[in-house]
Image (cartoon, rainbow, N blue to C red):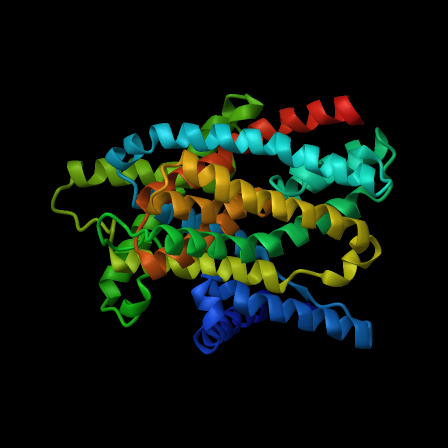
Length: 401
């Protein structure tokens, strides 16, 4: 049974309502900053799995609109990014990138080690490492022919998708508790109480916006996306594979360029950077994207490989949690921004860029804005890490394949 685009969108909206109700009803969900799309999306995917077990019917979703929502979200992040903030993020960005690359080696060593303990081919450990976790579903699927044809792993696709799926769920649940633990233990708070980059603070959810503030933000987002498409096409024309960036990264750059030049060229224009209307649109786009991603997980497809995969991903969860807590937090400065980055690292390490951003959004809406974190995390996990991952996967396959 396949739900249409309209039915999928309507269900995603209901998922967000359910997530908000669950977070308000169960204090531990809000205390540990579990994103509302996660609270509502996971029960839906469990229900579709139970329906499959009872009736044998598979439920599919039309997800064409999902990627568009992701593009809107990152365009909004770009519109809130002035050059001054970017310059401040330069050194922390390099530190986070170096730490993340170091962690990628650790993640693959962990995967290979657990695979050997379980009597599996070491290449399965690489597949259950950065290929499917930091890489996500797309990277796992892209590398499937290599693992299948060159290393003899016949069910490489199932293993990769299973690891990526379990990783996505754990990443969605890990970031908030990490930040809550760090913020509570070290009594951290933002240096300045500002409008969050995404959404509004929980105590300000009944905020005042109007039709034209929404239209103003929407227009700026569309201009950023248009410029992002132009940037992507220009980079593709160079023919350099390393410059073939994902559209959401190009739209992030498009928003950054517009927000740093348009207000100077048109000082009378009511530019929406930092506005509540832009924050709410970004929150809506991210929430809908993550709700659609989680509610559409087909858990019944993972049954055949669940046992060994749970062993590998479980070990990866422990390593990622400890690495964020003991390494990332210290390297990033042991302050509030560092705690928010750690919540995002939970998404980087086991999930995907949107998961990292959702984790940070849940924290920022509770405690306060963290502008630097919202710039450096997507740049690290949406661009640099993908380039490094291809090299690291090949290295480990040469060593252990």
